[in-house]
Image 1 (tube, rainbow, N blue to C red):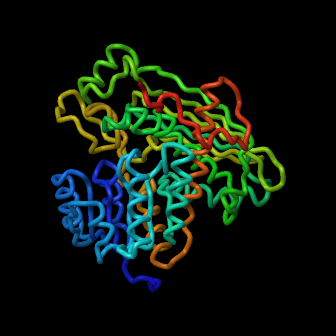
Image 2 (spheres, rainbow, N blue to C red; image 1 turned 135 degrees about the vertical axis):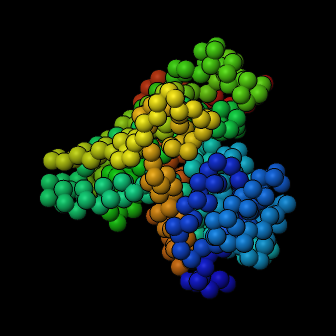
Amino acid sequence: MTELPKQTLRVGFVGTGFIAHFHLRSMIGVRNVEVTGVYSRKAENRARLAKDVEALGIGRCRMHESLDALLCADDVDAIWILSPNYTRLDVMRALHAAVKAGRSRVFAVACEKPLARTVAEAREMLRLAEGAGLNHGYLENQVFCTPVLRGKEIIWRRAASTTGRPYLARAAEEHSGPHEPWFWQGDKQGGGVLSDMMCHSVEVARHLLTAPGAPRNSLKVKAVNGTVANLKWTRPIYADQLRERFGREVDYRNRPSEDFARATVTLEDENGNELMIEATTSWAYVGAGLRIQLELLGPEYALEYNSLGTGLKIFMSRAVAGAEGEDLVEKQNAEQGLMPILEDEAGVYGYTDENRHMVECFRKGVKPLETFEDGLAVVEILMGLYRSAEIGATLTFPAPELETYVPAVARTRA
């Protein structure tokens, strides 16, 4: 039996990709934590992450040649699942088996968004975590974005308390496309941009609409309406660019996933009031970089946030030449001109406060603000949106058919 609170939470990373390094950088601002282990399939990736852990001064990270070795290490208390979508259920099954067999001392698990590719997978992720007696957290960073935390606190304390609760949340997230080939493959990722980014938008909107201290399920989903489209990447010139960049497995001439999605979600609060979420996501955005746009509206107030409306901007003329990179803002599209700068991406995007929250909850044995239950609820909404787009009609909830539903772009092809 684990004695809580733990003085220091020892975390093991499964996965070493782009998102793992975002989490790593955020850990600098988290107390009472060490990253003590890592597993991924490639030895060079494990070595790079372990080296970064040492350089950042956040622990002595051991490289493990197998997943089981990491899960059964005597210096790992909690697992962060940061590997690709199509691997996460297998990781969870292995963790469940190791804990139940008494081979693992792990007592908590956190998983990156989305929790799973389908409702069936998400439900199994939750069942496995609870079956092994694990505390579990769903890593939805936008809920912990610094402007979201501050904005929600002010709106509900000053405005909603005197004029009534908010009733409309709008969320949009757009960039020029993912970094890794598996994101572009419907069967591996679970879909396209709707699966990849709408999970952020619907959950941050749902969070903003939820009264402070109230459970997230205090808002009931009544209906969803979704639209998906291929706006850019199926055009021959861009489909060929993807193939050249990522290889033959990414074939957007013949097997595309959507690069644009729109959602309308109708909810009902505890008093029967109707609430709305409007969300759009896109991999076809051409601009400075990753753009997150949020709005929250109520009877006598409004909240607005745009991630590219930064206080710090830098201008570079045509005479300034440099290599392509993302040193100013994620998904940076230019190295010249007037460009926004995010001084602390991991902080502004919410990774620091997210990881601080998860570490403290796991150390103390407290249920986190975002759990696998929330991850399941998000996947149910996403699958409802995919189904709505496929049938061309609004889908009312509850929708039992979603239990076995797989989006068209994720179905196995003969």
